[in-house]
Image 1 (cartoon, rainbow, N blue to C red):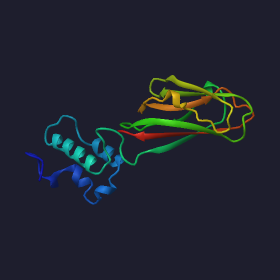
Image 2 (spheres, rainbow, N blue to C red):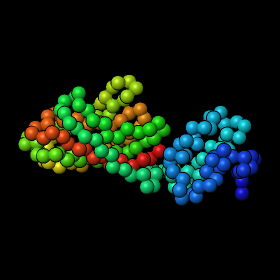
Image 3 (tube, one colour):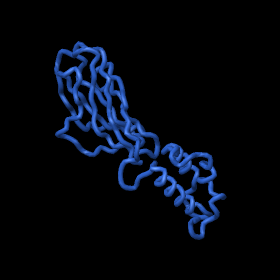
Image 4 (cartoon, rainbow, N blue to C red):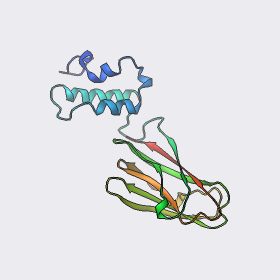
Length: 186
């Protein structure tokens, strides 16, 4: 049954663009691409396209209005190869329109740093050249859990912001790979 008072589905850009794709194969990126082609004024059938985008996103389980988008959990990595504020390494950098919820992070040194190292976790805004420290965490471990479970919080990362890390010193190590887990919610 078509949407009430809507143009027929065969005239829909949303449906036409994805007509050869199975519902189970629709991706969040495809929905984002379609969304970017629909004008916001809501006239001349675009309000119906809004509804179709929502229905398609919900039916394909690529959109959520109540939490994480299914099957979007991802591990992001970045390598720290120097210490200090000038050596911030970006780990999560959302695309425009995306929202990710950070869940946790760990570091893996190429060799034991041989000292207590303090990690800094930052949110950086690329458009305003600003950053804000979210947490610091000190460890002597070769494989530290950077985001302490006592400080768990919902950390939403949206464009043009990104999640980055730095260390106070490298000790005797040459590099540290930081892995962060996040789930996309939009």
